[in-house]
Image (cartoon, helix red, strand yellow):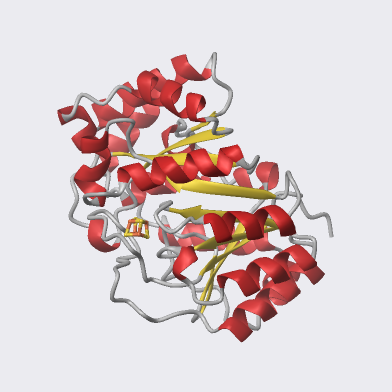
Length: 321
Ligand code: SF4
């Protein structure tokens, strides 16, 4: 089997979080104590190794609040796998940095911190008070210890009200020493369901800004602002690999569609051996059956569907490139 190197297994460890962002699609909050059983997570990681999956992505909620986070880091490091952690930065402390530093070697770890703005007020508008400075401090500490750290910014309509300056944000992040800047959009599930979404004009505006910036700043990723293109199948998977998303109830191939389960926790082998691309395309067909085109290119464009864009606006969007 020819597996792409970047294939990853993403595990949603917990829906507990030390923040309660008002656009959280996982509906995470400080009181949510349910966690993914450690034995099951360990089994998944070991199986991933045996199936040649290279990256393990830990997310939540806030993965650092998972009670067995250090056991997991230990196991992942011991198996020689690469580790990606999505965090809001609040709980990143000396112990965490030391464990990462001493167990996982350079190039095999990437910590992604959520950072919505270089301006505190704008960042905290949706994430809550006292969420900005701890995130900045964590980025600085991680960078100081030579750990790869990236940031993710969620573009919101608030940004227009707050006159958010993308160029300033990018420069700010690069000065902090991050190696990658991801610009994304709200996932309209959970607490974000009722949130205002970017208008077509706003999406196009951001996209133009991004294209301009990306000419000079190669470290910017903006999957959510790619162009739409008609195509039969999702070619992104063949090009850059796939992600398998594990939840306590089973697997999904897309965090936007966690309710579309493709198997229980014992079925990882079957899903991969059964040709994950076919499974994914079947899932997309089912999700997109009411849309005016057969398929659209790239994972991120599924989002237009979930942003509840109507047929006319999707076509207008397609035609605008
Ligand atoms: S968006 Fe992230 S940081 Fe905010 S509540 Fe949800 S899991 Fe926590």
